[in-house]
Length: 519
Image (cartoon, rainbow, N blue to C red; front, side, top):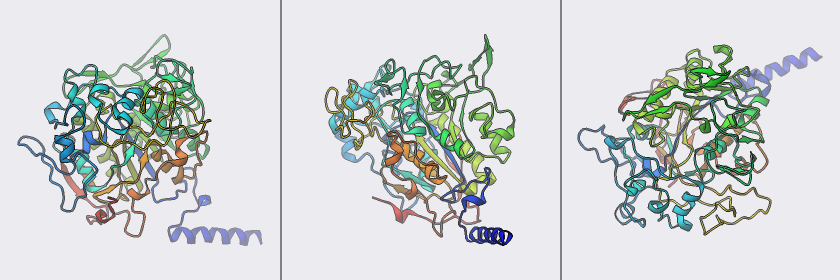
């Protein structure tokens, strides 16, 4: 009788699989059950871009002679961008101006937790020049400026063929570390020490380096408690990794790893490849790789070993080339290619993005992969949209609605210094299952990516006031219905961002989803 029950159970699994229903018990660690057809998520996490800075005039480019041209497909949806009134009679002291390719490398703006709130001016969005223009910028009006499809050509072309969200925000106000930690945990509280540079009331609001006890290449003393997405993935034995340029040591000094590799950007500026405060998993003892040791073998990339899921970018390329892409991968370019103004720029970023997406599209894993392009903060660049304040705070560094106030604190037990949403940023999904030439206006934030991963692999939630519990969905950027999975591969020239080829994996161009635009 027991043998008959087992046989019946096995036949049921086979039958369900035949009609496309996933069964948790039918999958091993290398093929975990998912709630969507997506088996691989790759998050390309860039640096310091507001939505208007990259997409303010999308899909209309100036197309001057000598620059890559961009011409939108007929019927391309518009975005909530820079109107004629915002371009010509902006409430700020200067109007936005177009930056061209010769101005790709700029100064960095002030993207501090307090400065961004002051620039928002209780929602008037009119004090950017006074509060978020960079200290090193000789022309403070540059904080208002933007690129169009003749410079961020690759990004605009990806938006033409896949899904773009124009209503996505930083989870909280603040710079890189705030955004990176929100991406992986939705929780910036739990920092030790509880006060100091970049930390207030036990909450990260700045860019403190990880503790040197958790990262040989860092110079700080900050650690984080609580759980992150790596802990949830490990509990379910799902492969994953954070891959960052420059993570592999160039040597050792006194037994301590040294991360000293450098590169020059298109303007010749040289910067260190590895930036410790951009690596969020290094703040947590459970997911840190203190000595930056490499994986024990190529086959162990994504699995638990001495590297503890923290890798150099080259390890991602190795895993992809070997046909062993982890289920979840976070990609952080070396500093010269990460888009951060000052050390990087749109052209170097484009080279990185185009090369990585090209490699993924040419791999067998493309058929069930979702690439998510997102950013850690806005750099303080102007954006005209006031974010909804879903998490209020009344701490000394808050200033949105006057000194010590940012929105309304509805829960007296809520952790302080987590005011948000912060500034608006680009968010894109590149996938065979992405809706094509589609603009989504679903309200999302950085922890929406966290939630998508949690839901896709049924991981549960972080808990302890993590913003994953209330994060907006990415589902509207996908077509998981009968016609889904047919968006064609789009290949970009890394130097120009122009499309060099469009190829559907099923031999067809794929179906258009423009009719689903939310505006």
